[in-house]
Length: 389
Image (cartoon, rainbow, N blue to C red):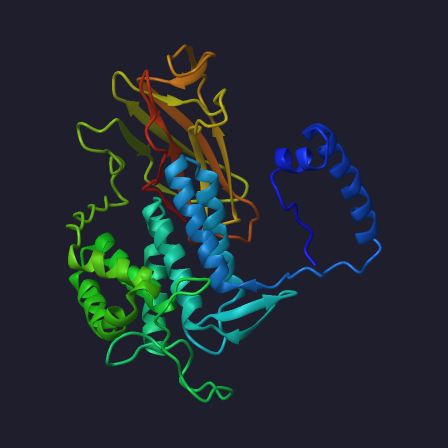
């Protein structure tokens, strides 16, 4: 009952004594009649539920795409989705728990292993894309998943121990339409080891992998994602040294290494915000010779602008005075670009939106992209060491 063309257009046209353009025109007319008939029928409804697991997949895709393509807006979209899941789909009856599905603003059903696994994978992808603040959240939910679904022998069950509607508590091992939750959890553990350097994560991954030795040997072709985790675990890369976090009280805290392309300083390092008297902040960027930063409104869409924004708080109003950029021509662009070179200072005024509000959890985030005469670096987003109170 599915209509299809039995041959390529050129062959079918020859069999029917027509030219390919004549056949295409005939098909277009037929499609119009078919569409008119279909429009008289009841249309399928829209699946408008929200699932934690599918959102985790999307968050990971957005974060990875944003990092590879140099598109901060993709990473921001993934971060907003992650925040929304935690805000709307947290289980009120369980600390660090999630609910699986939401429809019409109402979340229900305790989350399954695959929900935690894919959501944590999305959070860790955000970490790799430069949003290190999601590391604690990822760690919290992977501990939560281990407590709910973990098996002492290794690996994880798909469902909670007290599911009243199940006769058997399954521990899936092979991939289906989605990678199995056990495989995703293994990759999460390995990601945490690589991100933090804590070998306890690698030890747990090896313990879990050992519990799957027999199925991996017998039907490994159906467990591709777990095979990949095994390869990662057997030859783990040396984790990077964790970066030193500068003290918030140092106005020079954001200064990078001497050979860095961009170094940043802020003054002052602490602001007491009010509603009626805006506080002033100066952010100075020093760009190494031979490089430049994109202006606040670059001429090309694929270039990331230099921008200062406030995150994690709607109570703070930020207004930034960006300096006038320099107009320059480059080999990689057909038109002249607006750029910052040498030393440039952004002047920002910050205040509370309402007198009764406060700036708890607010962060000032600076984003920029450094380029030379022939190419551009990946965009960088850093949280400024400024205490807002």
